[in-house]
Image (cartoon, rainbow, N blue to C red; front, side, top):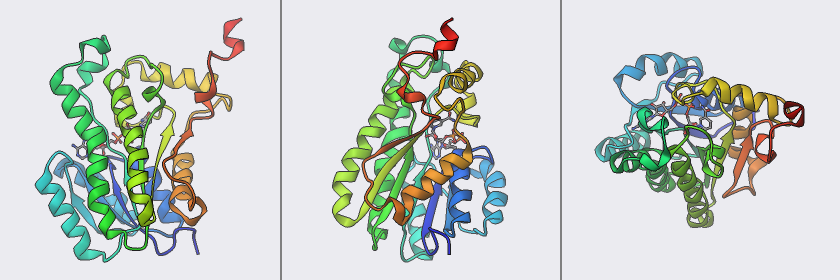
Length: 262
Ligand code: NAD
């Protein structure tokens, strides 16, 4: 019996086999969880379906998080198949690529609203919809990045969106804790995904963290997946409101590793 046997998990944010959501889904399936997936649009369905089928899931639900009607329909569909939900993985973020170059101070009003809606509000919206289905308690998981707390080149508005998301994790943990629902975020270092590649200088950032993290390693899908299993299983029973780093320890460094300074 795996540590997630009998647990039902909704995974939101798989775009392809490199997606962090997919790393988490695979680890949870290996731990015995039953999975359902949402996907952003018909374009992505052809990538998500074979991945879902490879872990025995046929419950695939369209959901663009900016569309309230689609979100209503998605949770109605989910509730018509499952009478109980144990976990939601929210691995969704967006900002205008053109605003990941240049200065943060030039952030536009429209991109601010859109980015914060998709990257932060959607988690609050999902939490409100998922909580009533978590009749035996549950876990809500989201993904953040340390650009929330420290200025990271080109991360710009996403840093502010992640700061808002991390704050939302704490407020949601306080609201939903009395119902036995735990709310946590995983903060991986840079990873080679579609969203990660959209950040200018991604390859340099990847190399920099690898060279300077205490473990001299970047996060892997397996490491993030294992952390998600811990948080969503009974092993994580007393952890809520937490931002857990999976970044080779990079976030503790105040300066690049000393070898690089000589
Ligand atoms: P990804 O491109 O594989 O996944 C991003 C997902 O967001 C996609 O599946 C996309 O369909 C979904 N999405 C965007 N807008 C949406 C909308 N309107 N409605 C529904 N879905 C929408 O990239 P990823 O790196 O796996 O990103 C997953 C999460 O991990 C994001 O929150 C990202 O910020 C976070 N994260 C990524 C890294 C990294 O370096 N890649 C590091 C730390 C945190």
